[in-house]
Every structure is written in C-alpha cells, then in structure tokens.
Length: 339
Ligand SMILES: Nc1ncnc2c1ncn2[C@@H]1O[C@H](COP(=O)(O)OP(=O)(O)O)[C@@H](O)[C@H]1O
Ligand SMILES: [Mg+2]
Image (tube, rainbow, N blue to C red):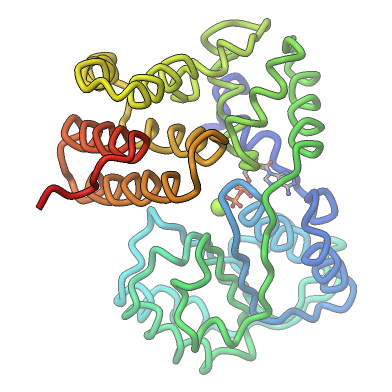
C-alpha cells in the first residue's frame, strides 16, 4: 500500500500514542502492561468502556512494544468489526494463526518478544454468540502459545466463559483536562488557532470521546482553515444548534399544539437527525428545574420509546410528533391516555 500523504492521514491515527505509557488516564491498565513489558507475563485481556477512551490504542501499543516492527506481522493478529468474524473465521483463521507455535526470541531488536502470539479482537461485542462460543475451545487449546485481547464497549455482550478467562479493565471516559491537553497538542502540531470558547465546546460535544473530538477538529480544519470557532465545530459535529432544541421545547411547554407542530415540521424540513434531537432534548429535560420529577420521568420514558422505534425503522416525523405531544401533555398535566 502506498504511504498516505501526510495531509490526508486521519489525525486519529497520526496522534495515536505509540507507547503504553503515553495512554492517558487509564492508569491501572498502563501499570499492568508496563509490568508485562518487564516480565513478559501477560494474561488474556478484556478492555471495555465507552468509545474513544484508548482501548485500541493500548492494545496496539503493547503489541508493538512487545514484538517490534519486524515480528509484528507474524506475532499479532488484529481483527475488527469490518473483518468477517463469523463462526467459520474463528474456526479457521484464528485457529490457524494460534496453532503455529512460536519460540521466544528474547531481545530481538531490543524487544522482549515473549513466546506467545497476540490475537486482538477489536469491537468484540459485535461478534455473534456462536462465534464467541467457538472461541472458547480455541482459547483453551492454544492458551500456552497465545493471548487474546477482547476490546468492546459493552462487557455484557461478551459471553461469560470468555470474560471469565480474562483480566478485565474498564476504560474511563476521558476528563475534560485530558481532552483539552491532547487537543491543544494537536493544534500546536498542526498550526491551528482555536478560539478559547471553541475548546470547551469541543469537549462538551464529544463527551469524553477523544476520537470524536479529534475527528471534529480535523473536519473543521479542512473546511474552515486554521482559525476555528465554536460555531465551526458545531457545524461539523452534527449537533443541532441549541436555539432549535430550545425553541422546540418552549413550544411543547406552551401547550399550543399548532406551535409544537410547527417546530416539528421545522426540524424535519431542516433535515436534523431526530435521534440527535432526542438526545439533546433529553439533556435539557433532565436539567429543567421547573417541572416535577414525575413529569420529567414521563417525558424521558417517551423519549426512550420513540428512540427505540426509530432504531426499528419507524418514521422520524411521526416519532418527533409523538414526543412533542407527549411532552406537552406531561407538562400541562393532561391525561396520558385517553383510552
Ligand atoms: N487514554 C487516551 N490517551 C491518549 N489518547 C487517547 C486516549 N484515548 C483515546 N485517545 C485518542 O483517541 C483516538 C481514539 O482512541 P482509540 O484507542 O481508538 O479509542 P477506543 O477506546 O474507541 O478504541 C486515538 O487517536 C487516540 O490518540
Ligand atoms: Mg477501538
């Protein structure tokens, strides 16, 4: 593959820490893996936690630091959600890779090179249960010569027999401080000028997900050049402008159906994604201090139901209208059901 020209390389890759010690905030896993580098002792691992918190980065870094570039290909197998990982792949590809035993070649090129292979299953929670079950045997049979790294957002989607064989590490959402430090570092390297307000906007729209923050930053830089404002970031992030959400909520509060309907039509006509609308609406509803907890609960329940229906393929307009009218009824204390 031809090397990427620098300008087109995603910054998410360009600024991915290459060493375990440079992974921020996840102190526990960094400590354990630093120890691994010294002792070559490594259990099977399960990394879980929200997106953009360093799971992939950490797994790639430890693999690179253990084996170095020369042995990497023969010692590390990376599979992510875009690879086919059905039951047959588990039976063949992973097994074939794990079955060929390796010797320790300690100290080759200055790398520890322990006598095992690493199999990284990124986004493992998207693997079917059957495929996960097929892995149990593979893991058991080849446990001497291989270490599995499972990476996922939701630990509950990893079957217990796999999870119980692993040392588990929860990756925490990144704090605002860390996000800001990383973002400023990239700005400096890339010669970007962020207005002060843009920095806090960026950390609030990316919600502890550094991948999102870096991606927004790069998109904004592409579109708007080296001087970036808060507004630029919002426009590339797909976040709905706060005025739109506020005016939608105000219309629901007014108890005037025509007004609410007009807001619904406006959101649809502007092409804002309704699921995004729900998520921002949720943020203001739970913070609203002039409506009762019961009213908040009723609206949230409705938001949850409507969001689920959207996921199931329902019509955006109808779901937004449903949320608008239910919110109106909840706030104006009308009967929830007329039946
Ligand atoms: N804890 C962290 N320390 C430093 N950089 C991080 C951290 N978490 C995420 N990043 C940055 O965010 C991007 C996405 O991180 P990644 O490891 O792919 O996240 P995920 O947890 O979704 O696998 C990378 O470019 C990386 O530089
Ligand atoms: Mg990842």
